[in-house]
Length: 560
Image 1 (cartoon, rainbow, N blue to C red):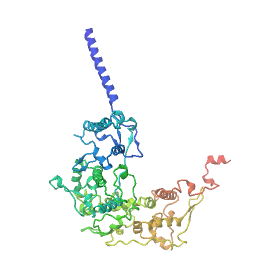
Image 2 (image 1 turned 90 degrees about the vertical axis):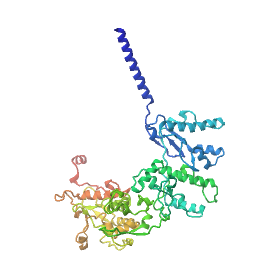
Image 3 (image 1 turned 60 degrees about the vertical axis):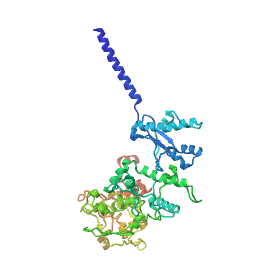
Image 4 (image 1 turned 90 degrees about the horizontal axis):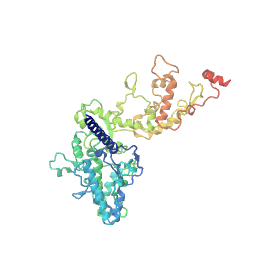
C-alpha cells in the first residue's frame, strides 16, 4: 500500500515538474510586443525588416537593413550604381523586380525566414572566403535589441503636376516624341491571354491609384482589376517602384547625358524627400492634356433643377491632383455612375448626393465646405448657421447661385470699401451696453471689414458666392433685417435679438453676454489669431474702481 502511494506521489510530482518546465519555457520564449516605438528622423536609405503581417509579434527584434551601405560596398568592388540592384533583386524578362528575398517558395514564417537567412548569410560567408569585409553571421548582430523600437517610415512621394510635367518634357527630349505609354497602361481584364492584357490606349490615360491603391474601395469598373492587382501583390508601392525604378535604371544604364541633365535617382531618399508643393506653387504648372473642356455646362435630362455652368480650368489650378474630383476614373462623367435615382454602379449615391453631399471629399459642396473650414474663412462660416432653426429650411435661398442655367460663369468685380459712409460704418465701435467691472470694449470695426474684404477678393470662389459687399457683414450681423436697415430705424445691434437678461419667451436664445463672447472668441479661435486671447483684459480694460454691486463680501472685508 505504501509503495503504491509512493509511486502515485512520484507520478504526480513528475507531472507537476513537467508543467513547471513547460510553463517556464513558454514564459521565456513568448514573444513580447515592442514597448515603445521610436520614429527615426533621418531614414538615410535604411529599411526595417520585420514582416509582422506574417510573423505577428516578433520573437527577435526587427532588422534595420543598411541599404545604402550595401550599395556603396558593391560600388567599391567595381560595380556601377545601376548594376548593384540585380545583385540582390531578381530580374525577370529583363525587368527588375524590387522584391527580396529572391527565392521564396511560399509566404509562411519558415519560408520567409529561411530565404532571408540563406541569401544574406550566404553572401556574407562568400565575402569572407574572398577575404573581403563581410556582414554579420551571428543572430544578435542583425537582430539588435537596441533597434527593436526604431520605426522607419519614408515620406510618401507626391507625384504632382510639376513632377508629371517634368517627366513628360524630359522623356520627350530623350525619345524625340511624346510617348505616354512609357508610364500609362490599362489592364484589359476581358482579354483571354494574360500576356496581352496590359495595353496602352491613347487619350484614355488613368492614374496609377485607380488600379493599384488597394486601401480604397473601388467601383464596378476597377474592383475586378484591383482584385487581380492584389493577387499579384501589386499594391501602389510595389507597382510604382517596379515601374519607376526600371525606367531610372535603364536611363542610367544608357549613360547618354547632356551636361545639364541629371541622372534619375536610384536612392530612396532622393524621391522620398518629404518635400511637398502647395496648390499655389502648382498654379502655373501646365495640367496634363486630355482634351478636357475649359468650360462645362452640367445639364442632366429629366432633372428638376436648372443647369450649372462649371469652369473646369479654374478648378484645375486649385487642386493638387485630378483625383480630387475624379475619384473613380478620368474617362467617365459623374452622372454615368451617379444617376438621378441612383443605382448599384454608383453605390446607390444619386446625382444630387454626388454633387451636394456636405461630408464627401469629392462632391462640390463637400469640397467647398473644406475650403470654408480654412482659417481665413472659418471665422465667419463656423458661426453662421446652415439653416434657420425655426423654419428648418436653408437660411437663405442658395440653389440659384450655381443653378443659373447659364454656361458662362461671371466672377463679380473685387469689393471696395471706398464708398462706405463713415457715419454709418463706423471706424470704431464702443461696446458698453454690458459695462460693469470692465471698461467698454473698443471694436476695430473698419479694420475688420477691410480684412474680410481682402480675404474675399483673394479668392475667386469667395468673390463669386459673396457676390456683394453686404454678404461679408452677415458674418457678425447674421440676423440683421435688411428692410429695417433700409429705413434706418433699427441699427444692426446684437441686442436687437439677444436680451441682456433671461428672455422667458425665447429660452433657447443666448443672452447678450454669451452671444458676444461666443461670436467674438469663436471667430478669433477659428482664425487661429494669437491675440486677442480668452483673457478678459485683451478686449476690456479692467476698471480701477469696481462697482460696489459686484464686490463680494470677502472682498469688502479685505478692503476694510
